[in-house]
Image (cartoon, rainbow, N blue to C red):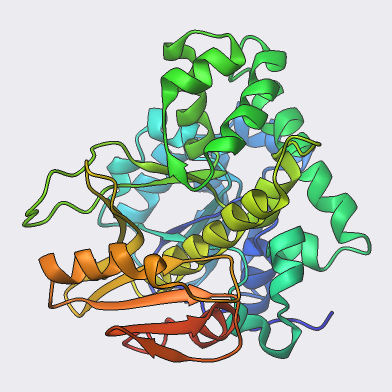
Length: 385
């Protein structure tokens, strides 16, 4: 597969580049900073050197000419280097540092905030449909996801099925993040049933047969490893009682499918529906992130049961989006969007479905999901409805 141009844009100042494993951070950096000084902390000898002597970075930096870019890959492996980087950025503004990471857990403890204002934070997401262009297939995206590592693999299905195991081994087990890896493995499956749903820690706790507090810690680990995200409820100027619990998503539809158990009692349409909703969620999240987080992603759910899957809200953005895994539109599918429009007439509302035609039904724009995803471009100021 040829090199795919990304919507991601770097910065002229020092920055953190976060993103789950395999999202293309290293590929992008090598493409845009081919002459940079590269420190790969995944290499055992380099890891040992900087773990024992973090001050060596100062000696290395002192020998570099003006305008040098220094990339430290997987900075979370040696978080003590942050103190050294902080000092070097303060003392020498003519050198740019780029610090990549696939986990924010250790960096939180080490104090990433110390670099606030000196190193901004950016995130690399899985591919967007518009990046892949003609190579994007909705059906494939719902099966194997859009992680570049997976898409470019010789056997994508085998790669996505081993993706979670890679994290279990390299990030969770080796770093000692959990005491019982068996409980955590069961948790990964149990919480897959919550993908696209309001998160209930109590239900997951019962399913895993572990304490609620432990499940809460597991959810935090997933977020710190960038494997999941939560979407909060939209409550601005609320005219109705809304729920307070967030919705949960794995960061990629393929990762969700690889972890979601399937059997005779599992409905394929239910699994497909959650995968489709998650695929839209990851696209909206990437769209907002690549635009500099000018907009935030929410969902809307009232105590009476009305729910809109996504609300994108920002200075120049106000959209309500419902996702349906169906090729035909029924009037009842528009009920929640119409209720939202009653409360927020300023919002634009659309329903995404698996049909082929763009329609206008009861003031609601209905768009084929594949078309919507292909048209979603962070370099455009608006979402095309």
